[in-house]
Image (cartoon, rainbow, N blue to C red):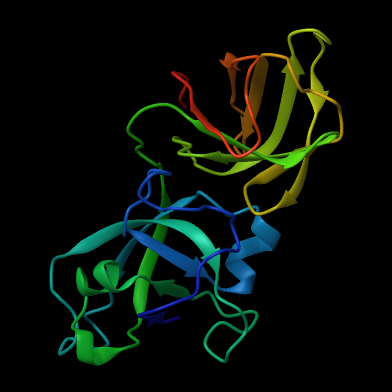
Length: 210
């Protein structure tokens, strides 16, 4: 397995990685690890494997990154290879710049987030595309539901792509609540996190976290 230094953004749907709570400690995952977007938001602890390339590793250092993107098949990211295409600041925390690609050791870890989950609503009437970000705990989302204050029932949402979940109901003019299930089965509910006067393109912070 290896690490590249740079990558393109977008496959998880996160916008500004700072406002969404991720900063520069991020990586794009190879197809095998990305798992069609199910890995978005998950956290990994990564260390340069000094037993193989001691001349390139920063000994005794590790970094915890969040999966925020897909590294498309390009050789290093081809299936079934597990590969992390890290942001430059994240890469430089564990290895020297000149190395470019280094062997690593990695493991899944919990995600520590500041503040509650964030819900960003895009789309149009009868199509709400909700980006769920800044998710703590395991970080990965396996299911989501939405409830309007007038309809007053929980509606299962479906994953559209990455961390974007969709509803095909008319929810305009209603306060919205969300229920989120993490990949380990734990569920959190953010009641009335979105006021009834919401507009498409707006983002709302909750006080709920895993």
